[in-house]
Image (cartoon, rainbow, N blue to C red):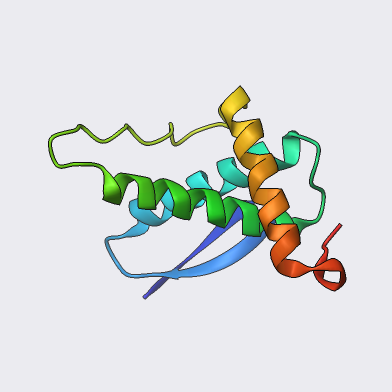
Length: 113
């Protein structure tokens, strides 16, 4: 097993990776870094843990959407692997909804901000 050092939101991580899967791991890291950076740059969330949870929820939501698409429809292309895409109006609405649901689930004692 190979180890690769990567950076996500300017923080280094040493990750184990099976031989031959380095490119897939680097693409996944880029996707996570991009999702987290987009949330951070929106300016409403500062806590790294909360950013990570929201990014994970967004990515899981995107996967669930793709899994539920009828076989006849073409899946939407994945986000570009490099750089953060500019936030879209629907992203802000989705983010606000996710933040509200997360706050409700955590309750007052679990708020990260």
